[in-house]
Image (cartoon, rainbow, N blue to C red; front, side, top):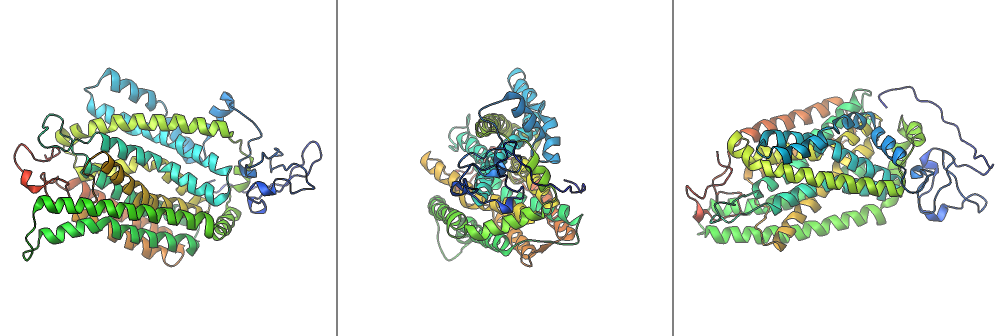
Length: 489
């Protein structure tokens, strides 16, 4: 990576004289049906390892079970130099946990340490997902890798939802995290299509005049995002339109209930759209994506080095996933516990917390992978991560938290502030305009990042709404001095 001279990797011969397959992955076939391709005998991959039935040759480690030394060495090495640098932050993980229990009143320190500790924990989750994806057919592997990268986001959403107490009568325990969750849903999409995609365009453009990507990735992704954006902002448009209407008499409480109903039905529809997209990508049209991704692999400047790297076994992948998910969940709980204090005492806005801070940390590790792929001229892989993660948030993660809130009898809806809804649609339109020509350069990347910075400035200066204002789930009739939103400065 990072422009080092590419070495020529020749085929290796197994010690027993058995046939060995070429190292380039585009010459390797997916699936167990090709396991005995050579003279009916066992198959060996680029490193001379016998390929296990059902495992893609690229992901074959040549080992079985769990080996602590190999596990630690491979995990510390990570997927790229950027990810390996992130592993320097691992000392913050025990420090964050220790401070939470020994100094529970040090709110700023607890938040800061757990915020930083989330990065290496999420990085391990992303790396484990990538190692597991190598062992599977390409398209399914990429989809699984993107899904696992979104687990951090799902965990944060569920922790926020579980801590939410939206009964204004319960003044002692009142914690309305729903505005934060709503902002985080949009913030996650913005972080992907503006910040991450912008960094990918910029990183790739630093080494080349232009980079090209396939329409199968960009057009389908941008079309789905626009569809999801329409569904996400519809409840907000409904409420805003009727709230300001002079020709229709509307009961505020009834309007809130209708917005909640629309949000739940919309979430079900978006969830079905996600399932249909997954079926389209992995079953009916997987051949198109296979060809696109294999073409990208052929352009990878570090392909020969990646193939030679030692890999985790299936057992080690699962263990890494379990460890990383446990740590991410722990840090998420500790982070959420401090949000109320930081907003109330330190003046951080709901929108700044949900739209910028939370999405930035939950997407950090996944974004590093995408930027590294763009640097290596694998723009289709990079966009698969960027757009795939955005689509998962819009069509799966966001609707999921609404449906779970429905089951928990919590008024989680999609009634966004109109400011947030406008930002989302404009961001999707901007990203779509940059994707339309199938080419990218560093200027387009810089412009995406600049737009994200402008949004961040506006988010941190945006005032918190009164309890019952537009964009909240509670009726306006409950507005009062004792019943203002708990985050009101």
